[in-house]
Length: 279
Length: 257
Ligand SMILES: Nc1ncnc2c1ncn2[C@@H]1O[C@H](COP(=O)(O)OP(=O)(O)O)[C@@H](O)[C@H]1O
Ligand SMILES: [Mg+2]
View 1 (tube, rainbow over the protein chains, first blue to last red):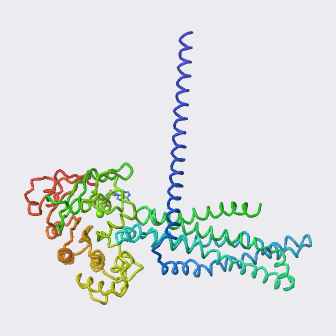
View 2: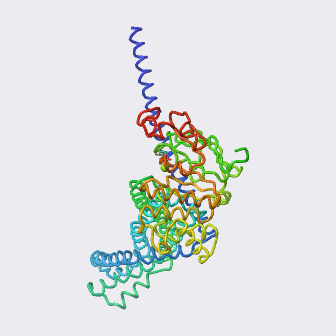
View 3: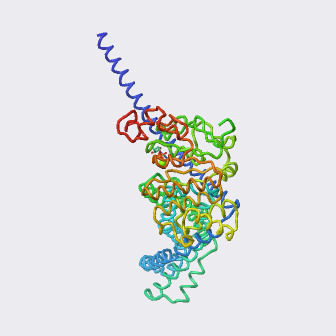
């Protein structure tokens, strides 16, 4: 009798101990993951701080900034233009099929312009630029890291943050709002074309309906979003490129990480900014 | 070696994660002399140079330049010290978006604030001293052969007339004749500048040609150092095995990897 009680007690202790080690194991794993997360976030914030500081501290490299402005802004125009054009067109088409059921066709112009200016132009432009520019920034800087060109910059007394990173982050932040403004116009134009030539709207009515509903905040909120997204895309490209692991594999991973992380950040920040602006 | 060394490393330690690469490096180079560090692949030679330059932060130890501690310098102090250094990287590390002359002029224009025209004439002079024609100046690095890229790298390293120059495997990947040409260029150009040099190689012909002193790195430590003339009768079995390139001896692949 006593013996069985003892064994039960021992068994209880054993399971208790097992549960405890299991808990300990889980706690350690979670702790390590949290620690890695915080460390990563901390490193990113330090990197961000340095990038921003070097935008404002001399010496400056105006020629490099100009080149990035052209690279990021001008060469992204076709991609952003195509995306917003077809999005504006499809918006008109879809909202028409919906609204015509309620005899509310007059809302089409408003839906097109508000969706474009507030959400779609900034987000789509941000994502397209993340794919086009973010990837190429990450690949270029990672290659420079892997081939020791970044080390070479330092030995020649040039700060890589000033020479490589500040111009890209500055150009990204400045150019995306311009791209989005152009995208807004092209998107509205796309909706206009479909409405006039496909859905039989009258041009004058469509345009007046567009202007009637549009307010300044709709456009400015989109442009602020665009600036934030441009900053994020360039920053993440630089960050992942700069911290690339060695070898060709490192460059590939840096590129992927730059695109994925900036795309996700764009979507999250878009939600947060919408909340800030419109609630 | 009684006066203060130009460059002195003591007890420099560096690990990557659990991997101990440098385990207490002690080195000292007198002013105007040339030290060559020999050692197998992956023994941490490049890491040692980068620690000395502050490109990689050593975990502990001391790195003195002209008797001044450089460990833990802030970025301003680091930039000032960096002006004393020139470096030829293992892979050349030429900026491939810039022309040859812009590469060579880079430190002069951006590091020293020299104007372009003045820098260009120095570039031509330096290109000439590494045996390259003026026409090369307008080419891009990708248009050059490996040997020519090394020469451009060398020209860039000496363009600012640095007091201390590092050479990371300057002859690796070159044919023996080109390797010898590069060795001569290194010897001549550094003698001309009166520079102190630290070179890394596993090419013994190159080491004998460049070195005043030789040191051998093994398992993260300097296990032997002495004048180049003592190299052949140093009595150190590790050095002996290395300079004769024998597969058998105290150095094993497990340890070298
Ligand atoms: N940035 C780094 N991160 C992790 N490991 C590194 C890094 N740099 C060098 N190592 C490791 O340190 C060791 C020494 O490398 P290195 O100094 O390049 O060797 P070598 O003597 O051939 O120049 C290698 O095993 C390498 O994998
Ligand atoms: Mg090396």
